[in-house]
Length: 327
Image (cartoon, rainbow, N blue to C red; front, side, top):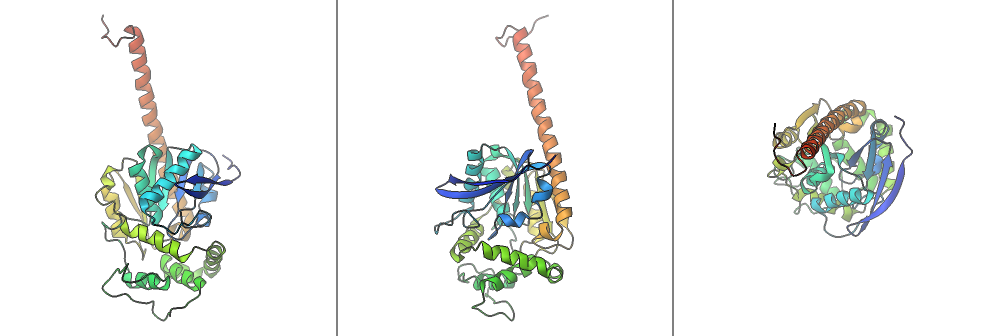
């Protein structure tokens, strides 16, 4: 199948303009990005995924080309943004792939709007506050302080700590580089300097206000699906990097154990941005899962259709009044 030309636009949802793109054709697949990221982050997924699926991606509130209101954000609001986009576009039910904060939004979308979700791929994410959420917290605290978030508001350990050898007053691009150094494995970060600088350039070309980053982050800190993930009915794949320094593999595995029938996979030697580090392998895993989920869904639909067809035949034979057939 040849991917169709991408289409982009904005729709008014929940009082804000949401930017979206559509690539390819086939069963719809919604991509939900993480904290501070916008649609450019899928540069290694769109070519592969859009060959088989109609890929719908959008910028979360507070990022990219979507509006950035300086008001309270929550994962519930952001999930409703996604559902509003889908309903406005007349798309659904869809497969959903969410990464990091986007994984929180994907879970909430499945819980609040189950009619819109065919399957879930949850990457570099967990159940939020109800899990062993973060690892390497001294680095995280330093990152928060670099972005100007008060350490007393989001303290992840007993003491806030600044990144070793780094001082405040850094340029925004240096803050972005530091964040990327945590999100990638050290080996990948050191061996791909041109790619790192390209990502920094993309983020600088579509700058996110500090208040918007803080509001997205605050929304994530309040999310907790630990007592509700059992209610997710869609087939789910939870995928994490073994060396993720932001979301621990243990907490991702706990999430998979909470979702009925969910599958857990771990990519050895990858970090938080495993979908960039090992894109080909990541894309193959996702496509295999979506193909399987789509097949199962089709079989279930056909089974329901067959049952409906038989009921109609019985009704016709029995005179249409639902009476029992007689010999």
